[in-house]
Image (tube, rainbow, N blue to C red; front, side, top):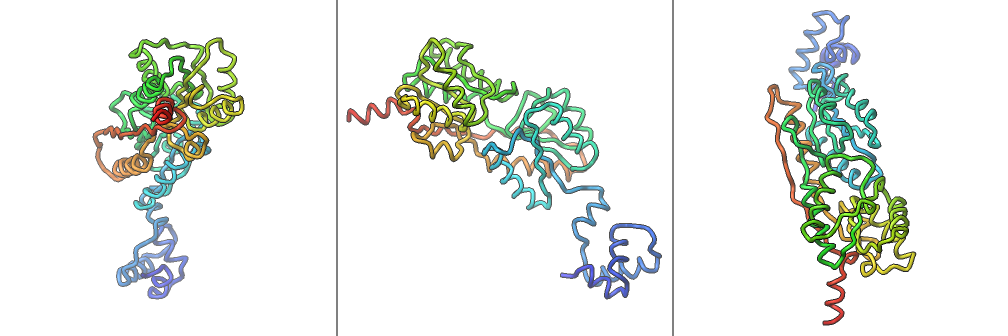
Length: 340
């Protein structure tokens, strides 16, 4: 494969002069330009990606906005996205918003100032009407996060149904006083999960107690705080649905340290099938999302948009999920196996 040095040697000119021609910079005579172009043609030399970006005013870079990289779900998502993006010649930069509205808008400026070619939003703190104007500067695709609009393509699971199924599973295991632990922001996802949770309770004639909805639960330490809070309530909680395996792990650990039997005294459901959910004793029931497939599809959709010269129809891809039933909720299964 020919290099820029080969072109310079054949043209009888310096590497710097060849680079100037490739990057369309001034101060090179027409005669030298012709020699270099002829040498490139003879050698079949193709300029590298940096030179192509300079001429096309493309960065070949994608920004991915997410709350925090310490959450294993987003770590796996980024890894899969980066792998797929490289297949198309794109690099990925990670932008942590920490669920801050202004930070989210600050990162969207990268699209507006042409520092990235496209944006993937794996979380959404601002209202869509605030985000919408940025579409004039370049393509945006939502992954994991979603909403009711036809102005942007989305890749996600049905979070409302997933929460419903997880809550029904708790009820089927004999839980009647069920708590709900969620993150700090009221995003579309958290709202959808809450609706699914509430619908499951209503379908089984169970009452939703607002004091058993705990916010700002994001990691293991928060899970421990959640358990401490539940101990202070008048009613004995026998089940809890959380939006994170990390939170669920914190609850299981704190409960076990306090002499609780999991799942007999307290059944716990997590979300995302992180490694910690399998390593905990007992293992944690959780909702598994097809992270790799969602990440791959999101990159493909965005790249198609970035490369297309005309407006494309927005698409919604809803992927299946799986409720992985493990020992943190296996009340009935344990009793049946013990009696058999």
